Image (cartoon, rainbow, N blue to C red; front, side, top):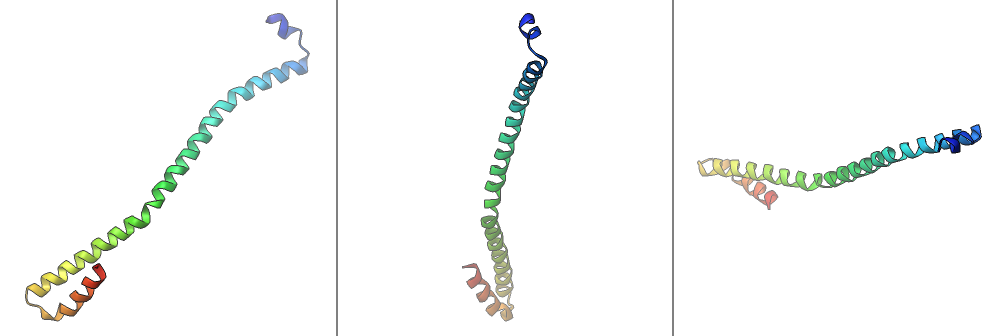
Length: 92
């Protein structure tokens, strides 16, 4: 092996070292690129769940408002009857 490398021309020696360096750099670069692609896929998947979550939060908010208006109506405040009916329609 020593004689094989020693008998090569200088340009071929640099080419050999360059190819070895390139080979050593390709594997970590490939792993980093693959990990970045996986992270982007995960981020897209998480982002697709935001609109349904916002809808659920809006439903919870409307339900709580309806519950508050219902409690006011049941405690004798008749002035909130129409607001409670409107809120019920929103919840449904």
